[in-house]
Image 1 (cartoon, rainbow, N blue to C red):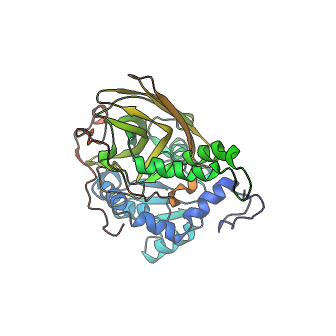
Image 2: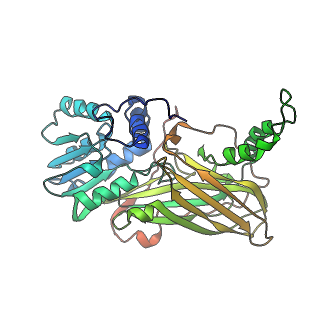
Image 3: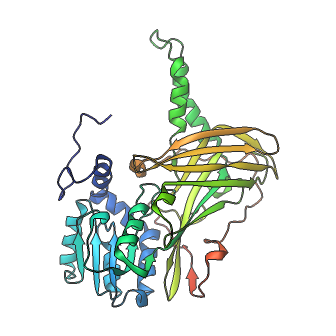
Length: 397
């Protein structure tokens, strides 16, 4: 534990302003290295720019709050699109750098940087638009969406626009022998009967539970997916904070061929509801890679599946104290009755961890799985022209 060690203070905030877990979170985003990593995500930054600059009608002459502004990049886009005023809200010490950038770019009269948690911001009047990048790995990690929703309730005019206004979290079963075997082999250390004369085996189960509780963040090859994904919709105009803190994704997948199901891969899409053009940001395995990658939740034991077998179960997400989620994974092969489960624990420090081992190919290439369009058809109510994330990712990733 960190109990004895004092964490570095968040610059610009009194030590007791932030709860401990928020100090860790906001410190992390207050490094220029962390901000650079996000800014250099070409897909992310480009699509945010398109969503604002190709929809000037939504910003011209309007007031805007940028929730969790970081360096203030989204605030600059809004100012360029003609916003009358932008409040860039950033709780970490990065707010000082945002202020420097605002001044150096001659926008001090348009952009106001507020070094506060958005929950604490008080404005004279509500604004026309909320602009934010509140998306974590597997959409909900870091629990920043709760702040985005709090800003909606407190700072946005009724009927005001949210950029983004909608997201969908996807899940699909995957196979990856190499990944599973790597986690099992880490556990085998604890099976030693005489490690320097000590029998370690009584800790094996605990070690296995720990290794398998870690989400695997990294690229997922589309050919490792065993079925078409299911999706859960998040409508930011209406969703409540309690609905974000505790939700379930029941599933029924139809397996595409003979394979071992090692667990479930997660990714998301989101939508920017421009009046002139809808823009979609996708982090799917078949799209260019982003800094969100994809996230995999392993089962403790793989489940053998065959063509047309039904994989049924659920992923239950429960918010935890580490700005993450405890994900309760339950699955079974409906045709054979074989079942498996696991509990995966995510936390805010996760964007540091990345799995790099080689993908193993499925035993037989499943028939090509048809991927859904970025958003469920029901949500495509606007006739506005739309575009999907088909940017060329940086080659140096």
